[in-house]
Length: 268
Image (cartoon, rainbow, N blue to C red; front, side, top):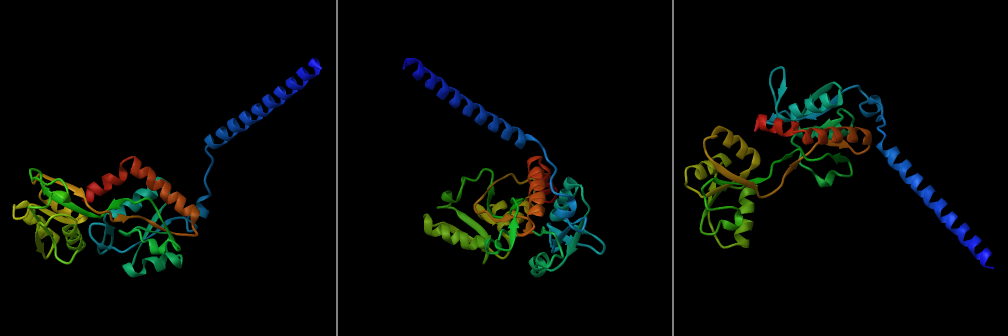
């Protein structure tokens, strides 16, 4: 009986050991399989026309502007960088902003790069890539100003563009914290003038206006930070999964290696 019990125990241990060996072998195989680089889908499947056709509304400086015979701007440079990363020719299709999503729907273009806001109401039609730019509101003030955030505004003054998102945001904050003085202006540049000249303690403006203004007044030492996020991304038709993967993957690499930031710095 003892001998039989030991035989049963040995057989059970052998079975368990065999199972563990097979499990380990499967895990090692899976790890090895995932580590092997395999070629992606053929270019013809990703970009059927042999090029990246990029839809753009070239009427919004500094993102895209049209001249008599050329296009230039931040979005144009980004499209060219993506094409270089993917090693494929690029062609820009200039059109009105209202026609961008329709052009994607009827296969006139492969992607849209045109200072597009991530529009969640369109996610049943398009897929958005990683955001490449934040156009949200920025709080800008002199480097020596005693204001670090919107919470520090009580007892101080804030300049902004009348009727803009900054105006709305300022009034939302007035309901959250103690009152502060407001200085509405016709343009964001005027609000920034007020902060630079000491008329207001800070200015609340969109990031693009802030960057362009500070580029012109580089001698003004400032401190700024985002108050809201307004994200720009690239749009791809929802049924073009291979195209999306290629564009989003290339964009991720360009963000990681600093190319996207270098393009932003070039224009802003």
